[in-house]
Amino acid sequence: MPIRVPKDRKGNPTGRGANGEALRLMSFIKAGTDPRAEKAATIASDTADRAAAKVERQRQQVTGLRHGRSTPLPRRRSGASATPGTMP
Image 1: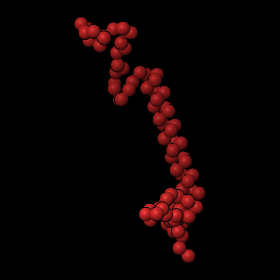
Image 2: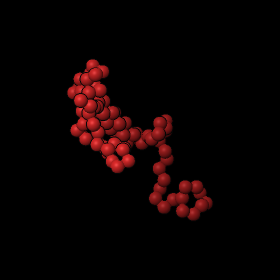
Image 3: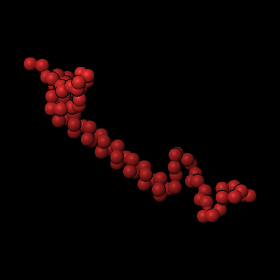
Image 4: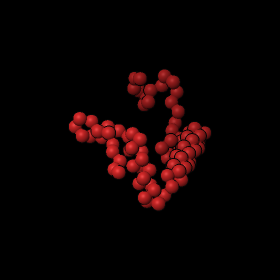
């Protein structure tokens, strides 16, 4: 029995319904992987990426470094122009 996907008037798939999700899960099973293990690996990878990004943001906040610079950017005084002799 073929699994059908809902289509609009032009014949294009309208979106992921239950049948679309069943097709995705079936592809994992045919490949020999457990869909639950795949989901757990994806969640673990995303969590690790978020944790690494958080550590990097904290490091940049503490050291004042951004975009891989070896020295922090000089801080401008409020009201001072970027270059002497120019108006803000």
